Image 1 (spheres, rainbow, N blue to C red):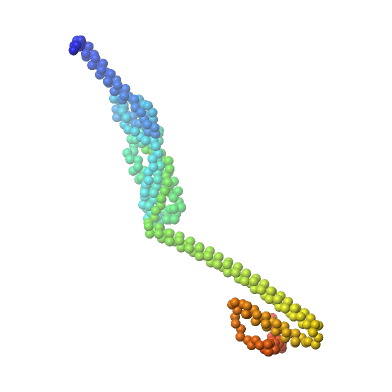
Image 2 (image 1 turned 180 degrees about the vertical axis):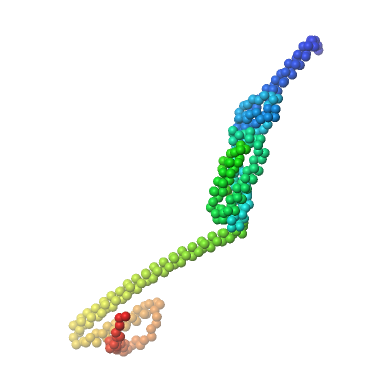
Amino acid sequence: MHNLPYLPYWTQTQIWIAVAAAVLALIFFRSAFFVVRQQTAAVIQRFGKFARVAQPGLNIKIPLIEDIAGHVSLRVHQLEVKVETKTEDNVFVHLTVSVQYLVKTDKVDAAYYKLQDSSAQITSYVYDVVRARVPRMKLDDTFEKKDEIADAVESELSHTMNEFGYGIVKALVTDIEPDAKVKQAMNEINAAQRMRVAAAEKGEADRILKVKAAEAEAQSKALQGKGIADQRKAIVDGLRESVADFQESVPGTTAQDVMNLVLMTQYFDTLKEIGAASKGTTILLPHSPGALTDIAGQIRNAIIAGGQVPQPHRQDS
């Protein structure tokens, strides 16, 4: 094994100094450059005092003099706050308010140093605004005016959180949940109102159907009466012509003989129809040919008696 050549003492010292300098230079170089991610800001301090805000990308700082105190997210955050409060009509409700907020790029230092817990601060202001407004509203107005509550929360937070470097994007009332018993009562009231409207509509529909049915029945009766009157007129006209033709064809016959013949014909036609009808009502009458004279006499006597009975005179009121 060959021995290394002897180096003077001062030469070895210089080598160690050079190596140490190279290592320190590398450390300084690595600590001088740093990267900040997108939608993030880095807070740079110099001897413990705020110096500047480093933006996303490649940045440089003075080693051993400046350091990164922390990172602040510039993204939009959402915080949901559930508040229990009482309305003007003494109904307890739970409101869920969603607040969207972010750190302003020009006030990153204020957001980092002034406010320790942004969520707790926003929650406190949401509680304050909701409990100041909702107790002055009735339960129904709370549902109708939820946008007004959200606007009030947004306005109050925007004014207050701006000092701490935060901007309010939007505040929304996403849910209003009354007490379970009150909710059930509201549903029952709504159901009763709808049933009342449905009953009124059903009654009106039934009334219209009955009126239309009555009108149709009246028109039917009128047409039926006109048909019966026309039928009877046709029968009378036919009988008149039949009597005249029969007297001309059979000399010596009287009108009485003709009427007896017509009545007999109609009698047998009636018996034929009663027998042919499957659901006809049974009529018990003497139906021998000799009984036709009695029937004709009864009809004739009824007509004569009706003509002799004096009709009462109607006095106009």
